[in-house]
Image 1 (tube, rainbow, N blue to C red):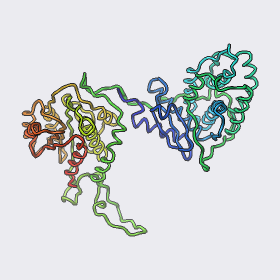
Image 2: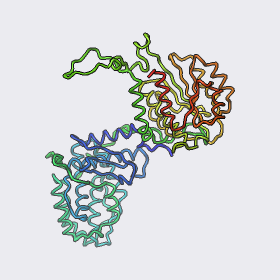
Image 3: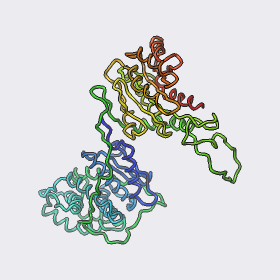
Image 4: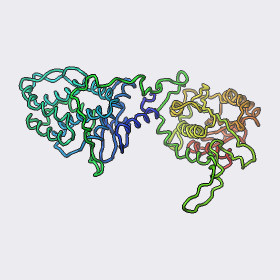
Length: 515
C-alpha cells in the first residue's frame, strides 16, 4: 500500500500550522489523527486543550480530502473560539449541537473571509450525504433533520431534499424563529436555551431523531470537556452576520495550496519494486540516536566575541571550536581544513532479509540503520546515496526530500535468493574515486554470501587507498563470515546482530570523526 497523503510530514505540518492560525491567540494543540478509534471525525477538547481532525473520513481523492480536513479544522477551531460548553441532557445536547455548529461556522466565516470556501465545501459534502426529509412522517425528529439540512442547503444555494408533513410544517413554523435566532446568537448560552425550548415544543424523544442525522453529527465531532477558568470563549465582534452567505462564500484559491507528493510511484519493477510507505513512526523511533550523533559530529560556529553572563560558568573549548559548516574535524585538531565526506550505502535486497532477529526482521533493522544515516547526513549536509541491489536503485540522497524517507520505510526483501554485491560495488563505488571529498566511504549491508564475490574482491582491492569499502554482515555464522571477509578484507568487515546495526553504523561515523 502506498503512502496516504496525510502521512507526508510537510502536508501534515501545513495542516497543523493552518489549524493553529485559524484559532487566533493561544491556540490549542492540533492533531491530525487518521485512527478512527481515537478520532472518528474531528473534535474539540477544552480540558486537554486540543482540536483534532481525521483526514480520511470522506471517501474522496486526496486533494478533496485535504481541503475537507482543513474545513473540519475550521469547524473545530470555531468551537475552540466561540463555544461555551454547558451540561445538557443528551437529547437537548444533540439539538444544541446542530444549532451551535451553524453559529460557530458563521462566526468563523465572519472572522476569516479566506475560510468561507472551505466551509462551503464541507457543507456541500454533508448536504450530499444527507437523506431526504420524509414528508409522509409526522415524527418530530424529521423537523430536526429539516433544519440540520437547511443550514447546508442555504449555504450552497440548494433546496432542502424532501419535505415536511402538514403536521411537521406547523411545528417548523413554531420553532423556526428559535433556529434562526440561535444561528445568529452571540453566545452559546442563548443556543442552549433555544435548544431546550425546541425540544419542548416538538415533544421530541431520543428515538425520533433519524439515524442519518446522528451519523452526520458524528462526522463533525463533539465539543468535549470543560474550559479552564482563564480559557473563555470569544464573543461576536459586533458585526452583523448575514443569514445567508450567498456570493460571499468565497472561492477556492488557485493553485491548490496543498499539493501532495505522488503516493503511487514505485521504484523498480516487478516483485522487487519498492513503494513509499509511511515513515514518520520510523523517523521518530531512530531520532534519539540521530540527535546523539548530530550533537557529537557537528561543529557549531565560534561566537564572534565573548558575552558576559550574570553567573560564572565553565569554558568548553570543544564547544568554542565547533563549526557547524565543517563537520567531523576541527581545523585545530590537524592544522588543516576539516576532512569532507561522501557516503554511499548499498543495501542487499534478497529474500533472506525476511528472517527475524531480536524481535524484528533483518530488513526492519536495516531500515532503522539507513534512516539514521540518512537523517544525520541531511542535517550535516553530507553528500550521500542509499542504493539497493540487485536492481541498482537509488532511493534516497541529499535532495530526496520526503520521498527518500518514505522509500527507506518501504524497504522490503525482494523475491530473489541472490545478490550481485560485487557488481553493485563496481557500479557505485568506482566512480567515487574521482570525487573531491577527502573521505569516500561505501557501506555494504548484507546477510550472506553474494553471487559475485570474486568480482567484489577485485574491485575492493583496486579501490584501497581511494575509496573505503566496508562490508557489514548481519547475523553471521562462521562460514558466511569467512566468505564475506575474503571479499571485503578482514580489516574492512563489521559483523553484528541485526538489532545492533543502527548503533554499529553510528560508531563508524564516530570513528571517522575521532570521537
